[in-house]
Image (tube, rainbow, N blue to C red; front, side, top):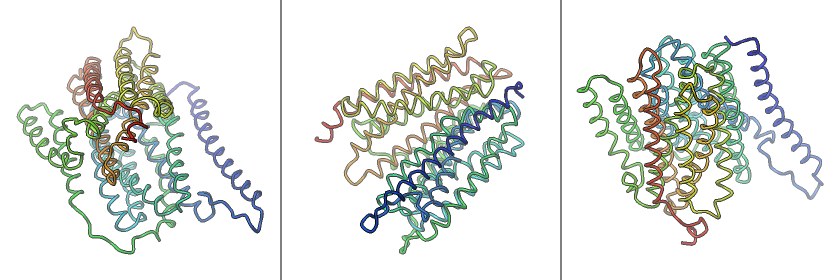
Length: 498
């Protein structure tokens, strides 16, 4: 338990969230009143709104579901050190992230196809139910292996939800409202991004880490119940046959990567060799099918963008997953302080995205991505240096904020390069490959870190293990910087003309 000011801090943080939500509601009500007052019958026609009576339940439902998934995604890194302290299993730390991401890959693949075939209502209900089940499993888990299993269940459900939400917007709103609703889905990450890690740390330090997961169940359940009625009539009139090939490829890829990560965690050289070779053999063929040709050798253009994106996510999230562990177990600070480092990264990531948008028309994609990767490298160095007791703890927060700024520059730039270099009519496939690189990067980064830190364990968190992993991720950042030199060197306008 924290000192007496814990209740004061949690009350302020909760009040900030409540105030933000109330402000949004009041603003929406004001907008609605403006539309009512500004109508001049009989010529004028009321402007359509995502908050109109017929759209309001669906809008609120989808936003609640997104907010619940976003809060869990951003809060788990803050909470995991407390879970390890209570249940043990430091050597399995990385699997809490890797299991989520690998299952997420399957959920995205399966739900997208089902939503196209049968409409978004049932996949949304199923995905939300599975996500809630995962929250319940983790919240009641008696052992670390149960936590990992629950995280896998959460990942599968979250993957389904992320795919179905976009289909729901595409079919549930008229054309003029789709851009506005897409903007709202991005906004639904703002409050969880700003207060999620810190609030999770406060909850973990006061009432216990289990309530970080159990407390989200009513939010997601309410969102499902509100959204489902508005989606029931959106089923396709003509159902296409299920395409199991893509699902099979995703399953083989997830299984292969999982086996390769398991090889890193075993102490038996023979078993590690068997798992590693088998995992690579299983994962390589579907990976080549699911990414553009030339990605694995970083061919200039679109393949290099996909490859850089994967390395970018591997390096950043490979460290990000362990920043709270370094601050809490390595420096002896509270989960609340650890959450502040992740919040700093989130805020600076957003700032980096806006800076990237400002320079997009004047600077080459290669330059912006390179600057972003360099900042991530600086952040990793600072994060490693902050492990020393002689270094001010504030360096960890500042350093990871710098890394977040770099991520905002590089991540958004990679997305733009993919859209600009994708062949006409293949933008969807290129975007799917980008998402795949993102997922695999996070899974591999967390898995490698868990293996390195777990193997270096000496009755607790090994500082040498954390430093070794940071140095490895710094090397990955350098490789990403090298591959990024194969991105377009021209400005966006020049590239479009070409």
